[in-house]
Image (cartoon, rainbow, N blue to C red; front, side, top):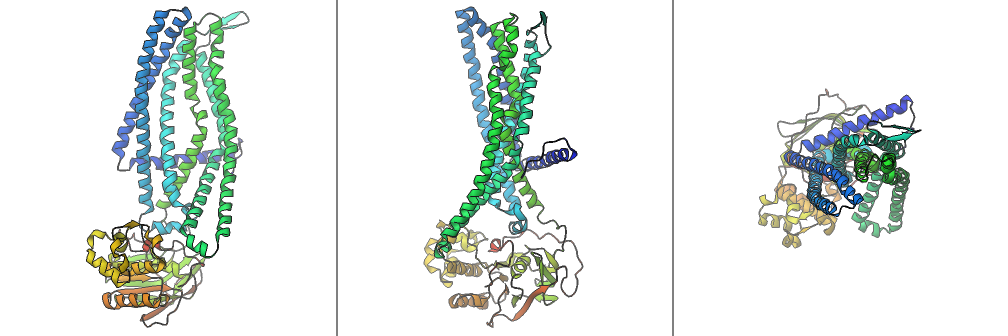
Length: 622
C-alpha cells in the first residue's frame, strides 16, 4: 500500500474522506459485533466499572496536584513540621491512587479478555456458517489465511481497542479536569516586555494547546504511512506462517521427493517479503520516533520555561510554580495522547481493516456476483436428486451435463464422467450446495441422510470414537457397533484406541483414512452417497469392502460419483457426461431464474468440509 500524496488537491481530500468513511463503517461493524454478543451485559458492567475508576483517579490526581503548592512551599520556607504533615498526606493520596490503579489494570485486562472472546466467537460463527468455509476459497485475497485473521488478528484488535479506548477516555477526562485548574493558575503568570507588565487570560492553557496540537499534526504527517505498511505487514506475516504450516503438514511428501531445497527456497522467499515490509515499518517508525521522543524530551522543560517569567518576576511562589508545571503536564500529556500513541493507532487501524474486511467478506459471500448466473437450489419433495439444465462455471470456463433433465432415485448407481478434465470439482461442490456459480436448477434430496466422500478423507482431531461418527455425536453409538464397523473395514487393530485423543490424520495412513470413511458408512447409514473417486480408483481390498457395504448394507442408498475417469466396473448402472459448454450458454433448455432459496440449517455432512474450495485444472483425477 503506497502512501497518498499529502497535498490539498481535491483528489487528496477525497482520499482522506474515503479513509474516514471506511474507518467509521468498520468501527461500527466492530462495535456491533461486540454489542450483539452473548456477553453484552458483562461488557456493560465492566465498562461502567472502569469509567467509575477512571473518574475517581482523575479526581485524586487533581487533589494530588493541589498538594504540590503547600508541600513545595514548606520546602522553600524550610518548615519541617509542615513538610512532615504534607508528606503523610501524600502517602494517603498515593495509597488511594494505588488501589485505583490496580482496579483499573484488572478491569482493563478483563475488558480485553472478554472483547477477544466475543469478537473471536463472532468471527468463528460467521466463518462456519453453512457453505462459507468452502466458498471463502473463491473470495480472492480476502480468503487467504482465515485462521490468522480469526486467531491472531482478532486477539491483537481486542488488545489494542481496549488499551487505546481506555487511554483516550482517561486522557480526555484529565484534560477537562486540569484545563480549569491551569486556566486559574495562569492568572498568576505576569509577562514583562519592554518595561510593561501584562497577563494573557489562560496563557498556560493556550501554550499547552499549541505545544500538543503542533506535535499531533506533525506526528500525523510523518506517521500516516504506518497504516498502509501495517496492513501489508500482517498479510506477509500470515503468508510466512501458512507456508511453514504447509511444510510441517506435508513433511513425508517433501522428504520422499527430496523437496527440501525447493521448500527452503520458498520459505526464504516468504521470509524475504516479511523482512522487506518489516524494514519499511522500522524506518517509518524511526521517523515517527523523532517526533514523539523529541516532544517528550522538550516537554520536560517546556512548562518551566513557559512559566519562568512569572516565577522570576516574583508573582509565583515555588509551590505555585510546581502546581502550574503539574497542571500543564497533565493538560499537554492529555493533548499529546495522539502523538504518543500514533504508532499504536496506526497498528489498530490496520488490524481493524484486516479483521472487519474479512468479516464483511464472510457476510457477503453468498450475495450474487456483479456478473454471471447462479444455480437455483430447491428440495425435491419425493426425495430424489433432480438436475435440470445444470452447468458450472469456474476460472472463466463452463461445463454442462449432456442430459438436460436428470433424475436420480434412491438405489441408483450413477457415474458422472468429466470429459473436460477439470470441471468435476466444481460440479461435486455444486451438488453439495457449495458452488452456486453456473446455471440451471438442482433439486436436492433431504440433507439429513447425505454423505459426501471427497478425494481426500477428512479425519478430525480428537478421540477416534468422535472421528468415526463425525459429524454425529459419538454418544449416540454403542461400543459394539463401533468395534464391528472397524473390524468390518480392516481397522480392528485400533479398537482399543477409541477414547484416545490424537491428530489421527497424522497418525494413520491414507489407506486407513479411506477405511475409516467406509466405517462411517456402516454407522451413519446415509441414503445418499456422493463420491469423487470411482470404484476403479480403489485397490482390490478397499473396492471389495466398499462394494460389499453398498450392496449388502446400503442397497437402497443412491451412489453418485463425479470423476474425471471412466470405469470398467459393472458397479454403476448409469453414466452421464460433463462436457465443455460455451461461456454464458447453459444446457439445452433454459431454466427460469428464480432467487436461490437459502438451504436450511442441517447437520454437518461427513467429510463435506474437506471438499476443495476452488476447483482448478491442477486437480487430480482419480
